[in-house]
Every structure is written in C-alpha cells, then in structure tokens.
Length: 381
Image (cartoon, rainbow, N blue to C red; front, side, top):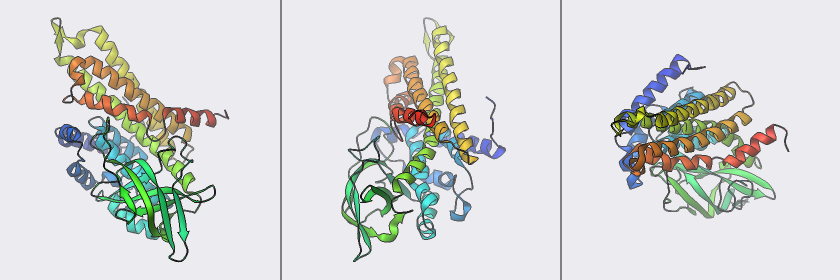
C-alpha cells in the first residue's frame, strides 16, 4: 500500500516500533495477559524510546511529533498486543494531553515531564456508573472550601485506565462545581480520600490497568483546577475527539494483526492434503479482512491529517473510530474461525485479539455515539 502522507521520519518510526513489537512485546505479552499483570518492563522500554512523548513539544521533553506519529505507533503495537497499545494511548491522548492542552504553565512543568518520559502515568476520570454514553450526567461533586482554598471532592468514577499502577501520578476528574457547571480537577495519587479499588476482572485488555475510583471528602488545592471553571466537560469532549483518532489507529492495528496471523496460519495448517490457504473459502476470508484493514487505515489517517492540519476533524474522527472498531471485531471473528479450535486457545494471538476487539466498539464513545456525532455534523438534529 502506498504510504500517502508519510514522511521519511514517519516510516522510520513505523519500522522501529514494528521491530520492538515483534522482538520485545510478542515473546512475553501472552504471559502478562494470562496473569492479568501490568507489563512494567515493556512500559519502561517504551518510555526510553520516547513513545510517550510523541505528540508533545520538546519544551516539556517531548518528541515534537503529532497525532499521525502517535497513530502509526499505536497501530504497530496493536498488531501484536492491544493491552500495551491502550496503555500508551490512554497515557498520552487521555492522561497527559488534558494538562498539555489546558494546564497552566505551573501545572505543565510540574506534571508533564514525567508523563512525557513514560516514568509516570495519568488517568482520565470521566465515566461514572450512572453516566456512560450520557457523559454529561455526572454526580461527582467538587465544592470549593474558601477557608482552606481547597476543592472537596465526593463521588466516584468507573473503568479508568492507568489509574492504579505503581507509577500513576494523577487522575484528572470531571466534577460538578456548581449548578449545571462541570469542571476538571487534577487529583494526585495518594491524596487522602482518593481510593483506587482492586483491578477489574476483564474479558480483554488483561495486561492493562483499569480501576473504579472513589472520592470521599478528598481535598486538593484550588490551583488544581484544570482550565477554566465550568469548561471541564467541553475540554474533555475535545480530548475525546482527538482520542478517537488514536483508538481508530489502535483498532486498525488489531485488524491488521488478525490478517498477519491468519496468513501465517493458512500457510502452515493442512487439511484434506494441502495447506488451507490454497482453498478459496480461506483466501476470500483473508482478502476481505485485508480490504477492511486497509480502509480502516485510510480512515484514521484522514482524520489524523485533518487534526494535524488544524482543520475540523470531528466527523472524520467519528467515522474512523466507528469503521475501524467494526473492522477489528469482524477481523478478529474471522481470524478465530480460520484458526478453528486453535483460535480458542489463549496461546494463539488471535484468541487475545478476539477478546480485545469488542471493547473498541464501546470505549471512548460507543459506535452508537459515533453515529450520533456523524449525523449531527451532517445537519441532522
């Protein structure tokens, strides 16, 4: 496939990350996945490669890259494993990016260097038990105690990635700071009243970190307000628009990984006297899988190009996320079918891909939400 819009630097980045994924991630990630263990050593290596700093300015230790570079990296990682890829995606586009986009100079200089180096991680606290797709219907509150000049936070969040690792430094949460007023507040890890529940038992992404969070009279300084008071929800929605480009790239990587594994297996597995890759039924399945992966790649790169160029990319991001997540699920199902009984065994990568694919139609905006975004952008209100 022609690399439309890829510079020499982008192509070199892709090859570097591809080798890392194949040589370092692939041999060990299966064991992490089975143990539901966070891969600290792999994350440390990714930090050393500068991957957590790709879309950030060198002023804070970043690589002066862009969302195209981040997307290329996520796609290559997800071709091998989605837990590692989502850790990077959530750390950059959801964890550090809100501070980078909306933080004060003091907040940026305090938090960003470690996050950009991959030495620390941050969480994005938006979702609550009673407000998933209806993200504006939150119940967590933050009251300003003027006597101490502190925010007093009460409530809870669910499904928060990178929120409970040994290297998590903060979670940015949305909270009601007044009637119909939602603000974003930085809550450092270890703050009294901030409790991280044990990790979830998940169907997929079993080597990533996800927790429920509770806040019980949790106090943080007033200067931990992120951005303008009352603009927290709008800020988070803009972050989600960018994040959907990244998730689309990750989903494309999973879809392509399914193609890679299916081709490999189809050449090795014999049935009725010949390799199954010689049968038209298998050939057509893989051809469809490859076609879907290619169109998903075109969609996320189009959205990324619009984002990098400063153009309106909201609809393109929603289309990319909707299409690529559907493609990931379809390709994972077909790859499992091609592998037969072996596709149901955890020792085969397609088993992980099958389990990991479904969340892509849910996280960072369900497929139904993407359709709403697209329809509204077309003037259908």
